Length: 464
Image (cartoon, rainbow, N blue to C red):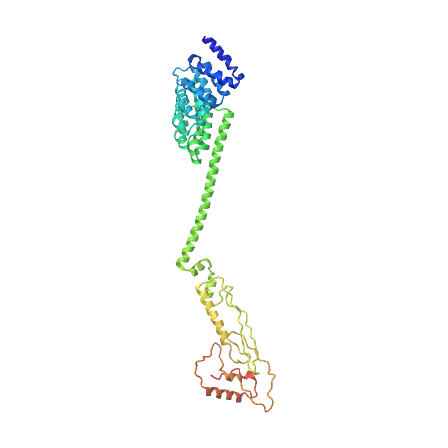
């Protein structure tokens, strides 16, 4: 009878774990699947079938039990208790049957349960959806499961069903893409007017997950924080619930501040680099259009007093101007016993540290004067104490140690062999000097200074 069958099924549920696996697979499972044809007995038969599924592997259970399970889930008059039993173990069924068969045969039963008018079945279906949705493909969750759960949430009048729907949506956030979350989930949460603590805390968990997965700082500031502040003000929360919401608001706000501070510092560094690049471009443009000297003039600018001193020829104040130290004169005794040559040795002019048109011109003048001084200083004997063009005096020559013995022939002055050069004057080798004039001048020199000192010839110029 039906009562005996029910009693047997109740006792069998307590004994399934005691049978060997071989007995369960060969004897017990076929008998239970045969009893699924009795629809009234399904609330007692399905629990035992699922207990057997726990003992067997997918290869042992799936092929044998799938035809019977397909027939059960397609029943239009499936008892509510049987539906609740099957929904409560839907994750186990998913693990024991083929994936393709589960999507084709078992998932429609879940969708039908969500759309049913029974609040208990809907709530259990929401729990089952939370368990299986992580193992579903993205398109299945977005196109089929999410709209049904949102429908249940919008139509639910029981607080437990509404809270369970929010928990199910919170579980889907790990599968849904950002666009779907922003376009479909956030508007649903904003439309929620309930401020019941259970609903509010489920919304808080959903907002927290959305902030971490789908929104940047700008989205959090515009979409999440205003809603959380409204909930914080309006909801009737106890101390523990308020502390959870307060921490979430503080954490999100701190994250936004840190991100904006980092971006502000980055913008500051970019502005500094931009200014340096613009400055380098300006310097490069000055070099291209005005030349190297203009670039130096722009970077090394002398003081106004130094510029004025350079204009009037006085000391310009630069460290590399012409030296002021006195030049030394070396006396050289010429073979033959007479004549001394003043050979001024000017100090070398240091190279300038910077260049300008006026300074470069002055350096060229100084170098020319130095070279001219070296060439023109080779004049024969200015008198002792005579001041040269460089502003120093030539010392008198030492007395000659050689004396002409009486009756010795006269010494011919060496100066007669070549004309003397005055300061700054050079000998032109192409000039046509009269040889007779040179001979007569040498003879006259010998007669005039016979027996005299060699220094007395210093002012004599045979071409004067």
